[in-house]
Amino acid sequence: MIYLVAKAAVGLVLPAKLRDLSRENVLITGGGRGIGRQLAREFAERGARKIVLWGRTEKCLKETTEEIRQLGTECHYFICDVGNREEVYQTAKAVREKTTKAFLPRMLELQNGHIVCLSSVLALSAIPGAIDYCTSKASAFAFMESLTLGLLDCPGVSATTVLPFHTSTEMFQGMRVRFPNLFPPLKPETVARRTVEAVQLNQALLLLPWTMHALVILKSILPQAALEEIHRFSGTYTCMNTFKGRT
Picture 1 (tube, rainbow, N blue to C red):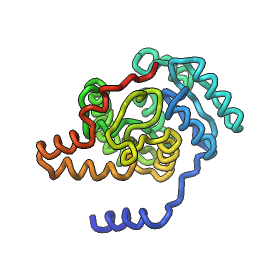
Picture 2: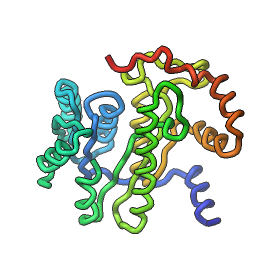
Picture 3: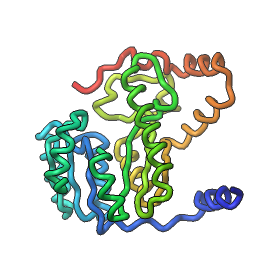
Picture 4: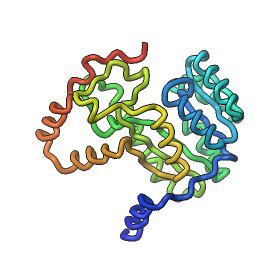
């Protein structure tokens, strides 16, 4: 235990060797816009062999595909709603002849693969006015935590869960925090860059920004009443009052 803690501490100071992506095929769901689009760019710029985009809006997918191809990376897109199980499996068959459950068996067989879930810090600390969103993110976090532990004895296959703070994308239009200078929204480019780095470093959990670690600690030690006062003071209880979302 002491060794592992010391190893992690050293890793924070000394740069670790990044995983080579030149032989990797990357599938990105929701790859037509927002963070998904930036992830496609980031993987392409870091040398990924091939990128496949899934999404519901062909116009956005086509634009992203052309952008990635101009970077010199092979890229294809498929229209697919990941909320539709049958559609996921049909599209998976078109891509590889056969979400996670569709591809994981093949990864285990080849002993090569990495599953990334882009969740939200709201999986750990919910806010009013976003019950469905917070619930889905908490569910995804629990799923990934269980999957990550289940892959510990599976050589070559790993998982990364990303929990970003409020990100400046169309999805979060109108969301307001009380102190925007203290808690500025993350840029999609930043989330994408840090996510790909986490994959290359085989990092299981990524909280963005790093100050979100304080949130986890505070939730562990403070009484509920104190946490409620922090939420009121920071404005998280009212941040969804002006929310518009993607139009």
